[in-house]
Image (cartoon, rainbow, N blue to C red; front, side, top):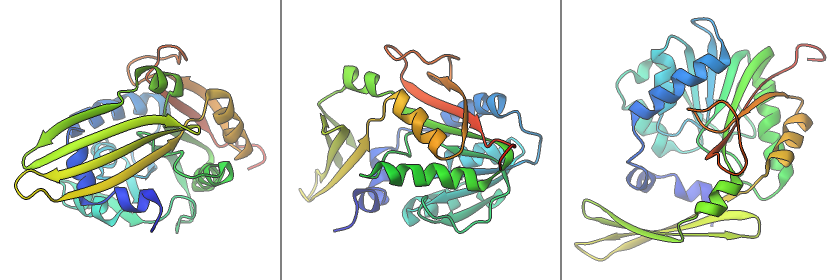
Length: 248
């Protein structure tokens, strides 16, 4: 049995998360461009790019984009999108990237973080972000707000997608938000089960990990619409910062 993230990001992921649209990604990228303040043609790494929504929007905006993901199924979907030839797609574990770096920006979006059991493994990801950046290069890590997740958790939901019944159960357990997903065919009754797990890092601990990785935090945003993070009400914790020039 592999790790949950090796099992859950296959073809069925595209069914479970079909509602995530490319229009929303473009709007988020517009805000990110303002945060990053990059020149046209800058090299940007989309770390854990999934099906490529943000990679493609960044390429449309005039950047030289590389999208990295562990899931071959999601990369295959990304390569099938219009404009995919403008992006370099690479399959890799985010803790050990087969790249030399040289990027003006690295983005890690939509809670593509907190997948591992050990804190040091999460710091490895942040260190790879630092290694990928040129001195003075910018990063964005878009993570969930644990307080918001706990307060607004929906324990159970069921929905349909064509012939597929999607049953999702969610719980907070041992410092993680955990989700069990059962996909059942309405026509034949066959079912497939998946598990997702993300570690709930509070703001202070996330700050410490960013510093331990040699990165400098500049701001924490609560969403792509608002500028300031508020623990009690913000839906996200979106970290923006830089690889320091001094000591690089």
